[in-house]
Length: 377
Image (cartoon, rainbow, N blue to C red):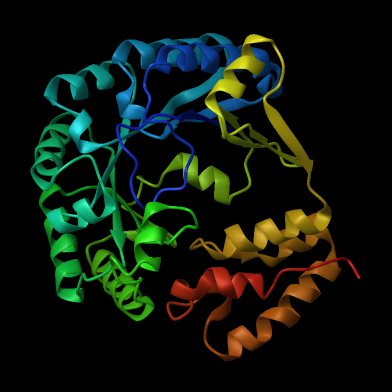
């Protein structure tokens, strides 16, 4: 099985924390849609012998697409690729883009999963992040979406400067009213060259408090697990049967094809990424040339990626599979490197799988890096 990711590089306005590729000039939106379709045609042989299990409209803000534009892309995929039965088709959306009519229109296209970027139910947070929606729009959007879609995920951001644990509890309590099956939640990260980084540097807003962020993370994990969610990946919580197929494919190392400017692809051996510029991307596609750069992954690269992605999930790293894929030397190495983290209570061995403990989850990216191999030495 495999997945197709489609990057829609447009937004109404720039969120202050975002470093993804996008443009606030929407004039070339139809040109980019046409180019996405053409890139799919140019690359369809890459997936000639595999089934597509998931289609994911990411961005940017895919909910800026008209239903007609989204339909043209979906129809093209169905005509040119082998689709699994009942594929997951996700569209990321901002609350202010979805009214009752558009929600119904998207459902009629075959889109069966919405990922809605709520981020917070506090107006001051939305203003700090320069989001394009307000709290009431989030509430109205979720009310309407729940009438049509069973499979809905929302995004929330924790660790926002000035937000207390009590406030964060209010966010978690608020989402319970919709009985949503999936929640993605990320720590606010200060990326270089963003408006947020500039504002913190200038003292306009305080820096992110890691201690407060950690407390909010732990409360969220405990609360959502008590409500029946599986914490199946560090930033993702799903009711049974509602894990994101798109994201799970990434963590399990399945091949995926990234279409659109700045989109990444992976085939198990190579990783590629399209140019991060709308005009240059359009020029390349219109000239029938590849807009991507390619990196062939070494054995060490692939091992390191498996460590990073595996430890972020509830399944951890299967040591027998690791040994089979990379050799016994890698199994021995990872266990040697993991022992100090096991002794500290951050990692555990369970059924021949190396996993994060509850204590280690918040720190897992740093812990994983301790297990990386620099070279075969």
